[in-house]
Length: 274
Image (cartoon, rainbow, N blue to C red; front, side, top):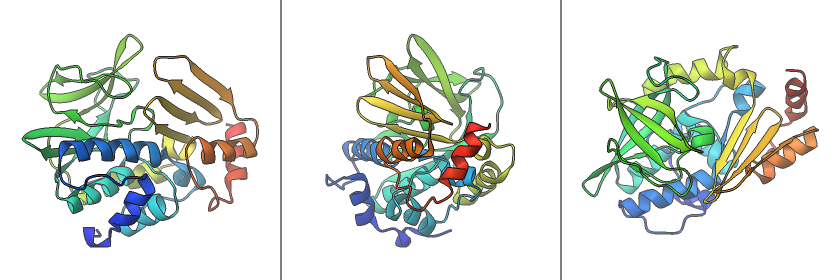
């Protein structure tokens, strides 16, 4: 795997529009989470269009920073890990079992990546790669406490000795994922990344997804359905009726540069016939 020496920190800061403090503090960590989440969207265009995701740092920087694309959890959080290490944070990569839409005690594969950061005497979670529920701040590694974020409240609960992250959506606590504190290494993400971005039955291969979180709303794309969830307000939903509407939404709502995606028309055709 590539090292932090392959990282262009200045270009990353330009990409996320960050010109604030660069010391390894909680305030910096929260600012990076907010700027990253609103600037670099979650998206699976490459697997959907038949290109497996690569996790080496030069590839991540080229795609997410220079090409102004997005990515999914391994891409987002591996890039962020390199940034945090370069700044001087103490970072532990973790793996989680995704439980969104599943019972809290379900045993699913460890197919998600998140980061644990030790800072200012606290342990905090940062995760800029969970699609429609991506965090745009950090959470204390603390059981049972409801923690406000710019969007939904979150909490961590105990499940058989593991941590389960939950979000309050409407009036319901919904489980996002389950994890423990076993340190992962970049090589540990290679097999699940290959599986998720190449297996014909993977939802990253069969369907199109994009998401972006700002301070007051969440944008979510599922196939041709665009939804905008407004903080404290109603949600807007509409169907994208053409490839031009799809491209415009990717560019405008999700800030994705689609100039390097000539097969988007064929992709839209797949979506309309799926």
